[in-house]
View 1: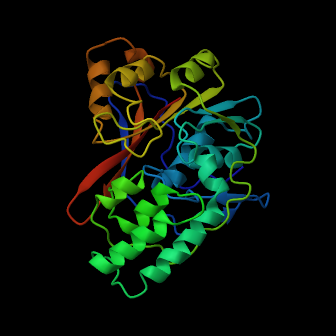
View 2: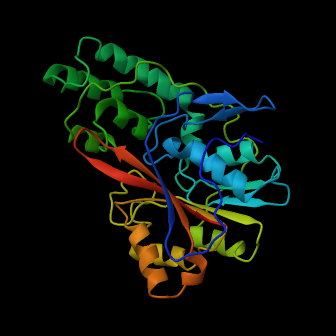
View 3: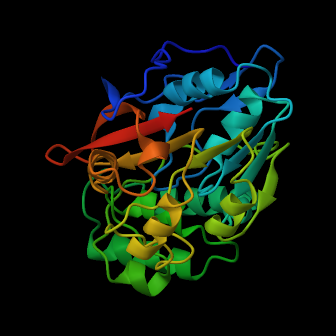
Length: 315
């Protein structure tokens, strides 16, 4: 079991208002560590993924260790919106006795399988960008060379990685035509990605509708729900199904939420305001949400754009 990092203490008092802890976003100083059993633990996803919760990992481990005080034997952890698999990966390393279900709706495992191709393309683009200033817009000549390199590449194209090399934060492309329509910059990664052998080991990987998956474990008191859905009313273009999580889907999810749960959100989704509204007005589900606790991180997109990320939990 991973040691519990400094974090919030359990508060058994149930109130209508959340108990909060605020901190600043800090990237993990060590991205790959070994736990006490010598097992490798990633604290950042091996490949880029919008919305991965690397800045919350220490807090996440702390909360999981409070919810499940053993090695996890007899427990099931359901990562209903698995994304990069980082939360599933950490959960299994933290609680090796638990069954950890990773809902790989975005087929992240396919990207992991092609890391060698991704590194090979990165090397080719690094040559094309060698004389182009970093963080600056590409010249017409360099831009054409870069696009030709991608168009002629004979391997797998990881568009999330490519976007992180050529577009500024928050921008993305999912195809060559989309990329051609963007302004390109030299933001290429300087080194290859490490191979992710074993990253998904021990996980039960599925690709299912989140509501069906959660419903199967709804009445199991030893099933921990990990919920990190796309934020409602925000851009979801890099997800496998661009339209798969809107307001109706959010309401479907909230009817299934019950303790113990760990829920991620930000001020961009207004989840905290929604929870408070349900509790204060004694609406359906208020008994399942009242007394939730919250850890908040002030995060930045760039020098001027800021927002608040939240880890919300109850058990």
